Length: 127
Length: 258
Image 1: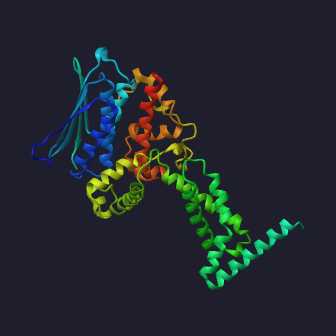
Image 2: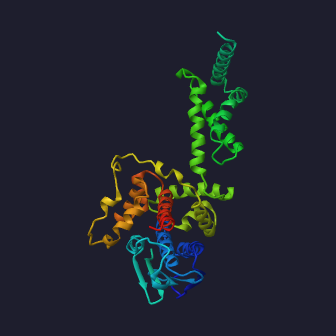
Image 3: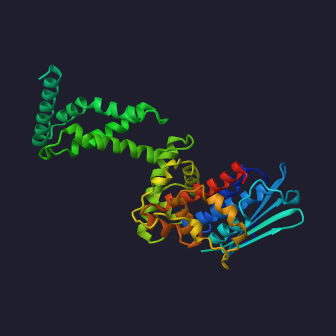
């Protein structure tokens, strides 16, 4: 499933329950790409952190959009959410610490705050 | 000698005789009689654990397993009373039950049982392959589908690790350990300095051992398998600890609005 350009797209309410759905989707995709359990657990940590970050920075009644792209070399996961006005957040987990957690478990992390969107890009090299 | 004391002595003597017969003949009826004679011990010990949210019937069953193990292992020549010997065995069985089955939410028994099998399979495959197994390998080993493996893993995170402080650690280096000691004021590798105060508050909510797990994983970059080896626990246990700690950090933040 990794080389035919498929992209799995999810659009979910930006609330904590959605983290679980994102995690399950990533679990299933990664498990079919021959990632071993330790690598999948790492992905889970990254996705948990990213979705938690995105959800906590988004206003209520908005959506979290997730793209999962299983490629030949990499598995890419992109999370996009609306950014609350004035960068308000329900979390004060320091961005640097969130970033550090994600960087510890995947190969590449890009966390961007646009004018009104938050975009987190995670990349994990395929086994 | 009081009547009660005489009765107790007669009982002890009878139990010793039964063990003697059991040793010589292996007679299962004698074994059954020994079980019957010690039911009260199981009931007494199980009730001590009955306020922890598990049905007494389940605790009694677990206690009986401990009793049977104690009967099968008891050695008359040690000169210890059977009840003295059996008590730690039964209590150990009950404690193991709570450790292994301490579920934070009610998970179907089918999944609880599968979780135990899954953990054993992962441990076995990790040792046999000298690496972390893939989902497919685990699914094949257990003869279940990939989706089942995912389902069991996900449900397994419902386990309750209130005993987080009790993870086995043999070394002394965690004495006085504090993660903040490792958060440099100005570390080029991490842009943490500006967040140091916030982090300090967050991390102060973690125990020393939780800090150690976080430090090993995210600061030293150790893999889950490496941490598992160092702490002498399974990789799955490390995985759950990490998840619990990160959830705790996020939960602390939202609750306390630091």
